[in-house]
Image 1 (cartoon, rainbow, N blue to C red):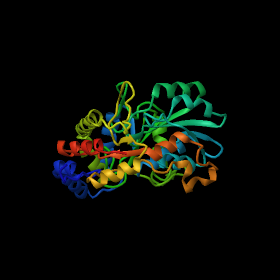
Image 2: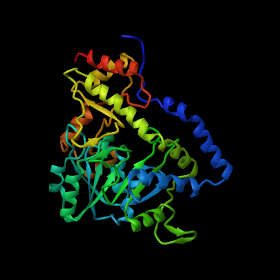
Image 3: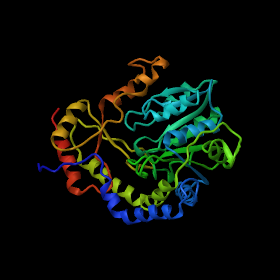
Image 4: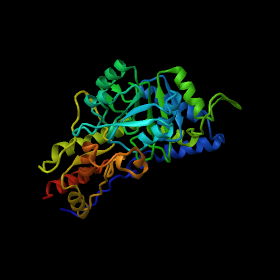
Length: 369
């Protein structure tokens, strides 16, 4: 093998191509001297709503705030239960407990990492108000099955699409299925800002208006406060950067799919379990997650060969110190625990060279557990 090293993520190929446009966006904002709730935010919200094939987009501070604002707007709080996957980033659950509701964990499918529709119905009680479907790693959940269950029990479906910008399910974009969807524009996302940022998308006009007010101190107009709101707004600079990047998102996602295809076809080591793509979906591969029973040895092997990797997520939420009050113990959610002990995320970013991709594949295929 060569001495080529491969980072887990590298923004430079992307940013090099659009540097002049980013500089122009920055200059545009400075020249206007308007930094909150201005024309850049309106332009991005309109473009992103159109991109997601929904009617409304409301920018906010980050992905956690986006989920929280949806829950607040739906009046979900103390005494209510919200179904969440046991395998997800903690922000999904933080939003639920932040509004005073109780998260009810449902296990994922081991081969797709997403919540198992077959296990949702048994978790529903008279206190259940919503199901949060997390499109983890960039693959949309089985939304037909989830929506059928929700409609049967009169529940809201909220999409956590923080990792699924541009993902498709039966030809429809992530974010266009539920009552509302939350997006994160954390810099590492497929559509990432130059700092923290987020958004909510929805087809419900009244809900959109309420979410916009809630994120602006509960105000529908200046000094007129109709809700106990928060301060969570998408600033003009991040909106301007996001508009530039949105114009390139599909092209960048296509490149990620090229890398994923090479991994899926080229990784042949029998000790590696490759991710499964469910029928009629088109994931955008925010994360390329493999599983290996000797995950830590594999990670060490790859590191020794110059390949950077990451774990998503090494400790499941029910075993995190933040949620000891929920009373769960090891063994309560064995699928999430197995994923946490075996998952490894491979390098995945726009602009990976063929040499880098081949280096990753070759290094994995030479691993001997």
